[in-house]
Amino acid sequence: MTSPGARPPRVSGSIRVPGDKSISHRALMLAALAEGASTVRGILPSADVRSTAAVLRSLGVPIPDLDRETVSIAGVGRSGLRTSAAPLDCGNSGTTARLMAGILAASPFTSSLVGDASLSRRPMRRVAAPLQAMGATIAPSTDGGLPMTIHGGPLRGLTWHSETASAQVKSAILLAGLVGDVPVEVHEPADTRDHTERMLRARGIDVRSEGGSIALVPGATLLPLDTEVPGDPSSAAFFAALAAMSGGGTIELESVGINPTRTGAFNVLTRMGASIGFEDFADVGGEPVARLVVSPRVLGATTIEPQEVPSLIDELPILACVAARAQGETRVTGAGELRVKESDRIAVVVRNLRAVGVDADELPDGFVVRGSDRPLAGRVVTHGDHRIAMAFGVLSVVSGRAIEIDDRDCAIVSFPGFWEVLAHVTR
Image (cartoon, rainbow, N blue to C red; front, side):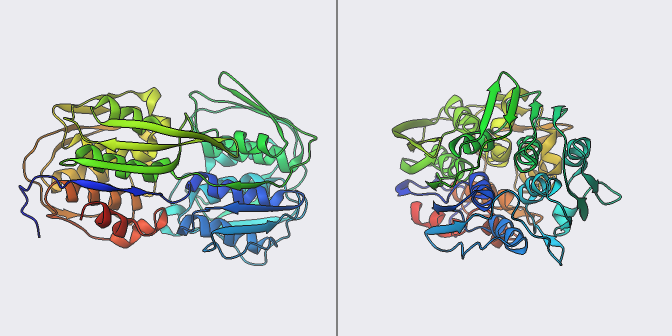
């Protein structure tokens, strides 16, 4: 074991991070609903995406093994899903539950969505409300989570003003409009991930975005598409952060999705002083991609404002760990959504930072982290949250490898092979 006070390791290597999780979910769903066969390369074979594949199989879609580099899917069309005799198990995947709720709301049969203990506690009323307004009958559990029963059928059009900026709620409404062939319009309080809109347009659907309004026009055929899934920017952020905090060297991250709604973490790392270059730009299935070249600089604290949060919500645990090694006080507000992720990420991040020796405070909708170069050591309790495990795994490597992670295996949810890649670039 390296001494707790050791200098951060040098890094080197070129990494192709796993396919984007958000796009992988949507690629499976849209291929399933398309009129014809689609081919998808580089899909993420993680536990969450496997949950989406399993749900679609239960609904009669022939989804092949996701461990293949190329997955071919024969779409059943928007009216081709069939009722499942068993409940539809979404595992730990909120994306599966919420987006499938939109699809099932327009499907003329009854379904039951279930999940593991963590997912069952996450809020579903926010997605149930607009779908009920469209005419579906939806019954979440008494505490607003899963199990959730959906009696689908013909829907009516909807204009919905979201109180919370949520790409999953927006996507559920768009998918309900798609399958139900009715007009929908969503007004967001802040911009959120626009993968669903981009992917629908690439498949022939008329989706219009203007300001904070997104509208789907019915009547078009959902076309099959042969495409590739870009590298997940949320996964890439862990290695960009590693390089930023390292003792020297460079990490290259190949074919990373740089959708403007997903690059907030890279913007913050640059603002904190990291050197991040973008090269080899390309367009893949409507999504922009690039190669990222990241190397360390002296890091300073920053303030992450509420309007930035939707573009980096999943990266806040790793940014908190970067803040622990930056000079000054980093403050994050407007991130109350973190409390209803796989864990209460505000409480869990702050509790674990303190456990390893970092000066940090919890805010109602965020946290404050005061950086230092003091030795860090202790045991991190992940609560089965993959992003907590990976964030503190990176912090352990750069601070002397004296931080113990209680559940390293949970990283498989979004990044199979994470620990092996981490060891490879720091050896």
